[in-house]
Length: 284
Image (cartoon, rainbow, N blue to C red; front, side):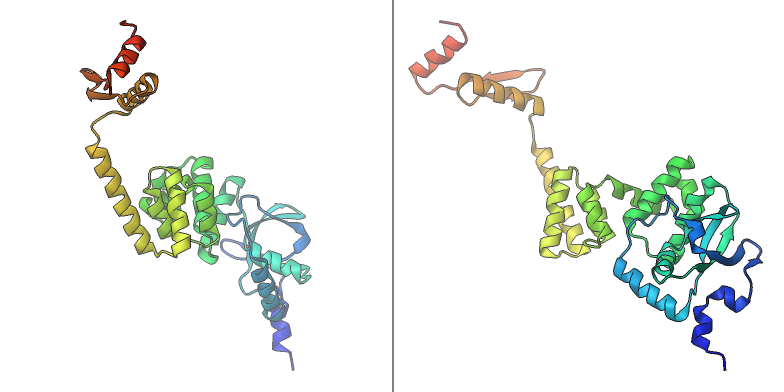
């Protein structure tokens, strides 16, 4: 009797009894692992080593269920498009070959294929997706609408991801490490300064704020800032002038009006204080 587990362990190529088989879009075959090189434009940049080990044990027991995707560079070399976790896990247990779909594609299409296939098959984090979208826009000269059409997303979704890249590196890392969710990050984007973004980020971590609580916090914060700005009657420039004059005269100087017209008010506390100010003005 044939051992079913061992048969599965030999991979899909063994089941089909082929080394290379033509399909409508791809060539399918078992490829020697040492002939495959990593694609530097692979969207996923970080890998959980423990999960790779778990996957390697699954592959050892059941074989590769979903083939990787590569492109042929030359007779003895292939470049990985998607399936790096499966590729790494197979190497870890010493497999010499791996089942793969071989795509016939140009260099400029590699990043697009890698992004689309990884989104469909693996859980990329939000920052990895955002970086990949940015690369596609820059390298393929696409606008957000055209990119959305290619990856099956609307323009708003594309823009939401791209805006994540404007956040401070600390917050981006927190998003990559699953310390916060994308909903948290989108709320933080609405805050004007990176210093304040980082303060709210720390509050989220310390108080374990939900996305909803974070949205409420940021909304109230922005309302307060708008109210403060609306009640402010003096320009930043006038405030700087007041500060310099106060420092020069040694007393609190205030202005009344605007930069086009108004008054400068110089208070004094005694006759001696008045004489001191007059001396500074070179009047006496």
